[in-house]
Length: 483
Ligand SMILES: Cc1ncc(COP(=O)(O)O)c(C=O)c1O
Image (tube, rainbow, N blue to C red):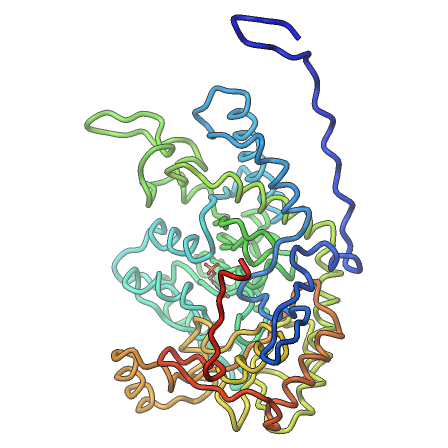
């Protein structure tokens, strides 16, 4: 040890090289999920390993993502403006994350840019604010969209909605019709890559071609697609390229608060950013501003560097698992679940229930029980089987109301109810959604549990709250005891 300027300086040591995490593969991925088989208490006082069938909402963290974040935290520091060693390293990691994402999505950095945001909702809102739209311009979205790919477009353009078929798939003939009818006015087609209700995978490359043929661009809401399928942005001279893609890290095993909008560089090079402030500028005077180069221009404010590191690692993990192997595993789970659920009397499944359709859907299955409220089924699954699912409308009310054939009168009644804070009559479905780590055994446990529930074989006596949810009568959970 030496003394320098009053500071004790240790012997200079190069840190050992970071240990590469073991390569992931689809057969071993379950052991690499943080919180897997976490024991949860049931109503009868027993404890069971939690079965998470709510992956369409959020996926758990993968161990290599968690480890990478923890390895980064000692180096964490401010990015871009800091001069210290850690700042430079953090800046490098942050910039690297952008590059990795572009590579993961097959994007050419000369043509596309990755703007890191919080999630798909923010990504689509950003595009809606940045996309140049004028009087009479048309945006086509569809009747199967999540609210996050519908509401941002309202008031920005004349919206036309592509219809759905009786099975709930996108009606491509209607898309063709709208493209012809609004020829010269359609600026953007904004569709989900996969539905968060029925799991349908839309033919995004074919839609891209059709949009480009009439001079429009394509946004893919990739929230539900990218955790399950490879998505390739393509070169801009390829008629099937994707112009914009919105993604959420928390749906792709990186729940650290970062998502992204991958989008055309030429669009973001134009105009002012939607969010302005520090980090987005090169020069500011009292009268004008020169914007920073991309992507900084689109990322005003101090960014979520930890989230960026996590998202990039998640992309690496998905690549290692292999998107084809992952899709095959999830299609097998979905086919098995459909086979089991189709046998249960009293269930109504939505969308195509043919197990052979699984290659064109992701692992999302929605159903209703004829004799029981959707929220009650979900509650009993949780309290009596330790199974986490989602019930309700999954932020896709127009799609669900259509599939459930909710009448205009019922919607008018609902409007009155919800204005008074009463959600008890809200229609909805129960949704099961699989991740790459779920197993056939879990699907079987779920199917058996549902079978018992619809036969009325459950123990608790459930009461419904004004928010629509059900709880076992008199049960008070002290959440602070668990965390
Ligand atoms: C199809 C689809 N789009 C957009 C979103 C919004 O994602 P986020 O809540 O991460 O912004 C979701 C979320 O469930 C979704 O399923």
